[in-house]
Image (tube, rainbow, N blue to C red; front, side, top):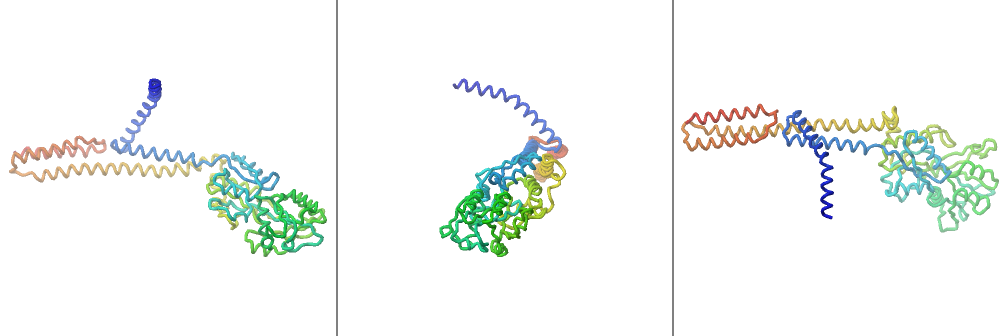
Length: 464
C-alpha cells in the first residue's frame, strides 16, 4: 500500500511539474518587469506583485459575486388569487430581461411574511398585506413600496341593513383561513368592537368559496373577505342574492384614524355591473395596502426590475385606483429600501435605462469595480517604490554617516595601530556596501559611495 501511495504521489508531482515550470517562468518575467519599471529590489518587487495580485483577485471575485442572480423566488398566494395572478404577470416581464421568477403558492399574507422573516426559508420577495407584522422580527425586511389597495368586504345575511360591526355580536362569522391577512384583519376589526374569540360569537375559519356557500345555505351569518382572494365573479354572485348584503362602513373615517394602515375606499354605484347597477348605491369600504416586501440583501438591479414590473402590472387604472397611483412609497410598518427610494425619485440607473439588462449589469459592474480598482492599484504601486527608495536612501546615508565618522578620526600624527583600526573599519563599511544588492536605479548613488570610500582610503594611506 505504501509503495502504491508513493507511486501516486510521484505521478501527481510529474503532472504538476509543467504547471510549476510555467508558473515560475511567468513569475520571473513579471518580476523582471516590475524591477525594471519601478527600479525595485527583490523584496519590494515581490511585495508589489503580491499587492497587485490581491487587488486584482479581489476585484475579479467581487465582479462575479456582485452579479445579479438570474432567479428570484416570490411567495404569492392561492391558485387563482390576485397575488398569484400578479406574480404570474411579473414573471413574464422579468423573463423578457433574462430573469426567472419562481412562484411559491401560499395561503396569503401571513404565511408570506412568515417565510420572509425566516432566514432559513429560501425566498426573496413576497406580497404582504399591511397590518400583519405584529409579533414578527422585520428588521431585515424592506418594502419596495405599496402596489395596490386590498379592500375588505364583509357580506352578511339580514333583512335590514346593519350599520355597525358590533351588531354582529353573537352571530356566526367566517373570518378566513389560518395564515391569511383576512383572518388577521377580521380579528382586529371585531376586537375593536369588543367581539373576541371564546365569546358568544362563533368565529369560523373558512376560505372564500366555503364562506360563499355557507352564506347561501344560511350556515353562517357573515363573512370577511379580502380583495386579493374574493374575485369579481364571487362578489357579483353574492350581491345578486337578495338576502345577502355588503356591509357599508359608515364609520370608515373613524376606522382609518384609529387603525393607521387602513384607507377609506368607495365602491361606486354600478362598479361591479353597470347593466344591473351592482351595487345599487355607493358603499364605503376600508382597505389596507399590499406591500412588495423583500429581504434587505436583494440585489439593486433586481429591485429595479421588480418595481418596473409592478409599474406595468399595478400602475393601471382600476376599480379603486387611478392610473399611476401605484406602486408608491407609503409610510407603513416596513422601512422603504434605499434602492426603492432611488427608483421612485429618478427611475432606473443610467446603464439599465438604455442597455439590455445583461449588458447593463456587465457594464455597471465594470464601472463600479474595475475603475475604483485602478484608483487603489495605481497609488499603491506608487507608494511601494517610494517606501523602497526611502529605505534604500536611509541605508546609503547610514554608510555615509559611518564614513564621515571615520574621516573625522583622521589626523596627521596617527599611530600605526590607530591607522590599522581605521582601515579595518573602512574595509567593513566597504564590505557591507558590496554585500548589499543594488537595483539599477540606485547604481549612481552606489558607485558614488564606493568612490568616496576609495578617497577616504587614499587619505588614510597617504598619512603614513
